[in-house]
Image 1 (cartoon, one colour):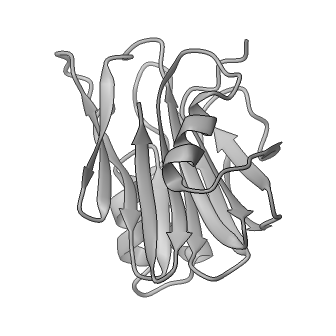
Image 2: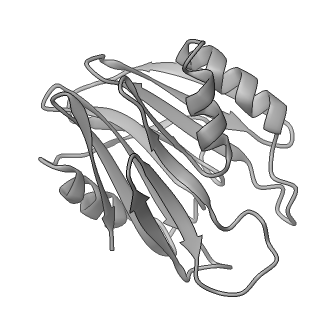
Length: 196
């Protein structure tokens, strides 16, 4: 079974944009996702001095939902107040670069906009930096990951609410699943849920 590390994706379901995050981990599986207002955090449950295992993972704005695997979540959200999603992702990922841990873990990020059939995915690794705009397709998700995904891949996803999205993402056939988060446009706001 393929191990992809942290993964995130964006798509369209019932005409509504959505985003998801899935944490797969071999080293730190004892983590949970905590919803606090319009933000979601990954909280590590074991003692470590690794600064990268707890982080803001989702930030919900009026127009945008931001999902990422690190502190870039907050910086992308802040940049969206003044810039386009593409520029916000390029500027933030270029400034923060990849994580300086033993694996040189890439930073990944995604943005979807309420009412729009377009989203953005970004990646920065030791030798690679890219940001791509994606035309969202009904019933399909486009995703990237920290490991063993070459650029952007697609998969089929069907669900009705954020909780079902998170459940379905957690069931995807990738190794060492820990948790998943679903974010779906819900009228004038975003619906968010975590599993387990």
